[in-house]
Length: 382
Image 1: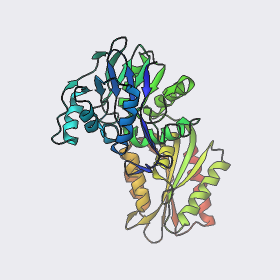
Image 2: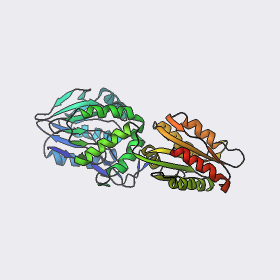
Image 3: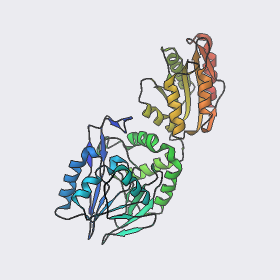
Image 4: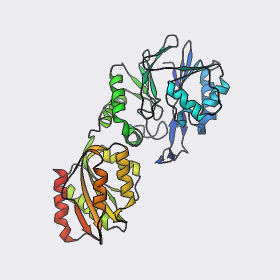
């Protein structure tokens, strides 16, 4: 296969998109297709421009690129376009019409011509190989295209099938960081992802080359396709209950942990307890989508709900959380308000079944509260 990897690891990237913790760094993938014509698949983040240009030059081995395919205009993939254009002024930049518009928005006063606008179904012949362009709008930007090379049975999937980490991070456990990546970055766009999966199902794909994470082949490819089918349809990957709490002084936390123990005693297949004040919010979002049941436990605050819980539920709504069973536990000393606030946010989500009874704890959990926790556990598991 004359497709060469020319991407870059960025081990020092510890906060991707200024919001997602990436302890294992990040990678920006780019590929080179050598044929009668030479095509470069995407560039990289400006943090790694110099390294990428060196990788490209070495892989070209004296040849000159004819095309640069821009599948996605986010700066972590288009941030080296100016350097590419300066080095290879005759190469044609190939992108969707909307991507060319975004290119001008990101790069005031830069002339990227010659350019070529492509759309769904267009084919670019390289010689013995061809590139077929497939529309992938809203995965997760509106200008995205993905590219299929039928001769190599390879799909260049843009941000689809990406994951956090450098390219070989957690090589044996693709799903963990791919799941966190998917739900936090692409989670809102399940319908467009489903549409792309339907298009992909009509193709003979043996390799997927994403813009983040490892190249997928064989069993890893099959597993990635299986999980994406679940994730994009907001299906259930793991039967279980996420108990997420936001506790000011620790009393709500104690009630949440007691509820978790009760759920386990009653036979819950899996119970995960998350501290919204201290745990990585992106991981809690991941678990909320992964499992089919959720209990939200929060302190009352300023006549509303403690802000970490508000942020969690707001993010769930923004990422299109749906088709789940949810229980509510609130804590309040003189005027409990968290339950009402949490319910109002949950009711804005699609197909979320809020079970009864909602439980109110007054200041701290007492033995007299245990029957209510038992009833809530029964309702959640039922």
